[in-house]
Length: 274
Ligand SMILES: NC(=O)c1ccc[n+]([C@@H]2O[C@H](COP(=O)([O-])OP(=O)(O)OC[C@H]3O[C@@H](n4cnc5c(N)ncnc54)[C@H](O)[C@@H]3O)[C@@H](O)[C@H]2O)c1
Image (cartoon, rainbow, N blue to C red; front, side, top):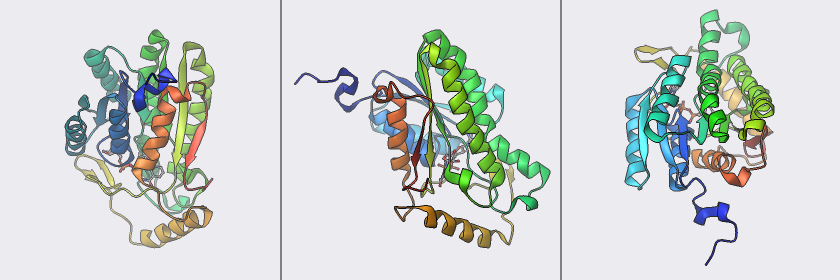
């Protein structure tokens, strides 16, 4: 039967698209890489941890998708530039960029953060998205097309991770501003903001800063973490944690041409938390 809407492409909405997914070595990033691969995309799996990235590439290739592993530290512009250069060298273009790297390192009230801890949080959860957009925009501007999906968070209205929440608030702001500045080049920029999501395939814990450096979880953190979790549950309509695959489904929609007239928007994938 002929397809009624050619954009549906037989359920393969990312067919022929080059999709870069950051932090694709585990969790929501890996689920997104798999979903975009299932939908026909060629996937650039970017992470700084070889073990997780290798597993993701193997899963994609095992399912018949084309995938390229790129090991980079995206907390620097040089790392982001290298990732985009490798994608362009291999495939000639970048159609989709999913900025997924992020995640709180500490859980505690703001007055207990040291200066270097605040910096580490911004380096984990704000800068990678800024650097990856800065590196990808010139490529997408030349193409006169592209879809960027930034991963936000419900933490912007939550407890005990203020520097992380500030980073994610920044991501929502840059999503809106970038959409206004680059729509004229045919580039769409949206965000997907997850609520608490169960990650079963962690290769590295959130306290992993970089190879050879892991921070200690403070003794009193368990209490703050319990209170934070209770606060999240109380805000939710669907009283459960999400699955990475549920986040990936929302990202795939925004990345695809099904969202061709949507830009500068946020989808809250949070069980009704927001
Ligand atoms: N899991 C949740 O409950 C939840 C809730 C709200 C928002 N989020 C957001 O969703 C995104 C993914 O969350 P997750 O829980 O799947 O994360 P995760 O910590 O399980 O995985 C993050 C991946 O990013 C990689 N990474 C981290 N820093 C990097 C860097 N500088 N360069 C390259 N790779 C780097 C890690 O190696 C890892 O593979 C994050 O932005 C997070 O803030 C998650």
